[in-house]
Amino acid sequence: MTLSSKTLALLGNAIRVGLALLYIAWVAVGFCRLHGKQAGSTTLQYKATRYLPVGYRLHSYDFEFDPPVPDGEHNRLSPPSDPVGKYMLHERSVGEAFQPSDLSTAPVVEIGKGMVKWQFPLEKQPELVNLLNADSRVDVCLGSCILENVRLLSVVCSSMGGAECYAVVEIPSAESAKLAPEKNYRVIPRQY
Image (cartoon, rainbow, N blue to C red; front, top):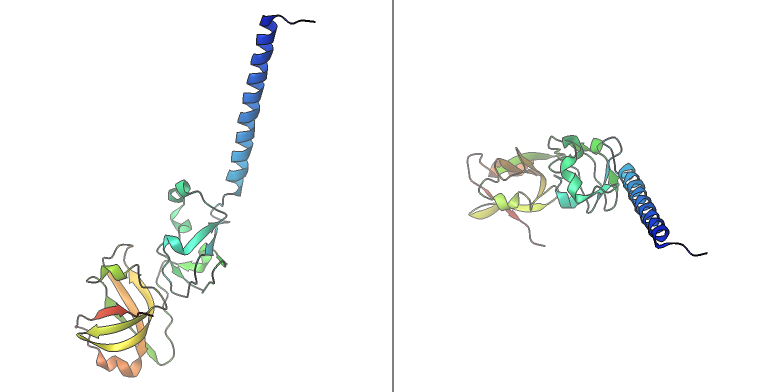
């Protein structure tokens, strides 16, 4: 039995349309599954990509979204879901998960026993805003270094930019007499 060229053309077109519809359905199902695996604000978690101590101010490279959020979708997250610029309430190890409830918009500063906190403005050292963070070690200098190997508790900023940022350090209460509030101290990161 031979088919006419008109019948073959109709059959070929029907197969093409069927394959196109099957492909569209396959893409739609894949998109729905992928979108279903994307986190909603109630299920969003993060994974630490480095050790994050208490008081650590998060940057975009400090965590991964879990489940993953495509790069183009980060700007669509609601502000409570975006952890950049927030502070850790609890420490996390590399690969350890944490949730929005583990973060604070207010700085977290835990002072050790017998220590006092001291704030140093970073307005003349804006490069340190994203370099220093909780548990960094610094020297406090005014010409010569007055305090050495001081533990940084947190970097506190009014915004993500360098304007109005402070390095908050802890020093032994006996050492606080060496400092005068009106001086322009420099905070120098320790080299290891």
